[in-house]
Length: 245
Image 1 (cartoon, one colour):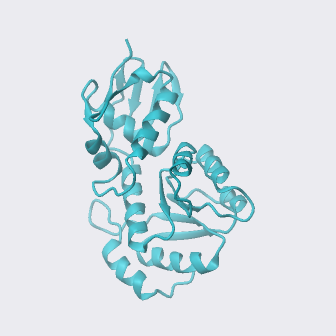
Image 2: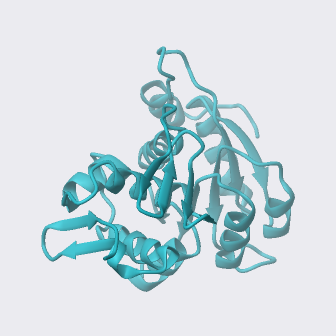
Image 3: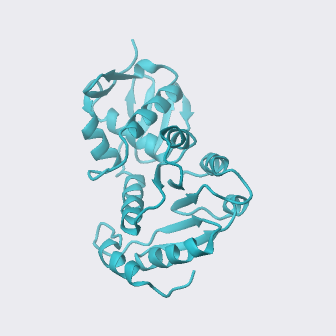
């Protein structure tokens, strides 16, 4: 990536450099999967100035052979493979958060992307500040939790320190966001968590996406848990985690 920094990137970078718990700059690596140089070059420049390490993949096949990054920024319009398939394959081999960049605004497309394993999405055209804010929010949610003992809820065991979940001895393959959502609901089993509380805690307090994102993740969790009764819906209120009787 070139390192000449446009004014817009400099302005955004000064305000949005990520920090660690000690207040020092935290360097996270971002894999940008984008075939268009006119988009990828200025985007990479801005992300570098905002404090990220940036790598570039121009095709889906190249993205699938890249070393794992802390976060993947995936454009769907790739020349060699369907972007949704690239997303699915990346998720099957990596726990790194995936933010999809799409020109599609259709709700069904976005739901399918989340089901394929994307953690978030941005729709073109988007602002650089919005994108960096989303990257920071997704990375913040994906950070390992402080070590704590594994928490059993009947046959369901949630190990926050290892970020692993077992059900009746079988490990569940969850995305980073699915784990965060399940762990949050499990903090107080049997207690109703309001939708706005969940969005604020699991996504971001300034979340501007559709709240249907939450519904999609709940539906996917129910499928992986194998019994919809694990998560109860209180219509118009929120969700509750409880062991099926």
